[in-house]
Image (cartoon, rainbow over all chains, first blue to last red):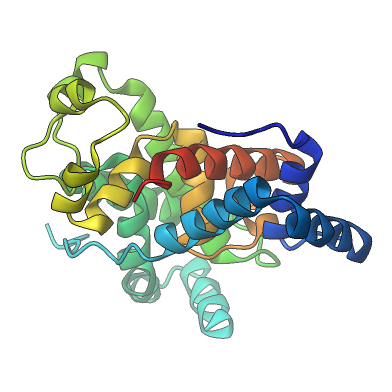
Length: 69
Length: 187
């Protein structure tokens, strides 16, 4: 299913971007590649969506009774 | 907030027990949530969270005031959860209910395989499913993902909490994201 034909370098750039560490040059490179490659676009979208999904998890409702025993 | 905590810790160091109760009150929900997400079991999470607060209190004099107390406390709690996960008997996992699922234990999870059919995914509460997928990550990835996206610590803070180099935090975060991407792409 995964099309990792595009080099690992681009995927690495996606992660660096997601960490907020990307340089302007690398960001331009990533952007340019994403414009041309629909597989990588999809991959990048999935990574960003993963983060959104993880962040959407609400606080669990069970409340602690710490130090009350 | 940071100023208040700094002041409280200063009082605790002078032997003010009531000040520590305030500190516990400020952090207990967050620390409990963190332990609960790491362990997937409320009773264990309470025990471990309580242990973390006790250890922090007992060792308060080794806390360096120039650092952030929350980071230090998370480090204690995270180490305790990881130690606890290591000590769990292997069969524990197979009998344990996966948190947030109604009686769905590891056996049925194994039977279902890691690619659940679309309908089954839709039947489950999405959040529960996501939590379950996070829980299925190995602890070292799970903790970094949780600290970053649920507790919103910076990469540098995570490096302090886990006591691992920044580069290792990044590697674990990347691998954690990759693993979750595969698990969540069909959601």
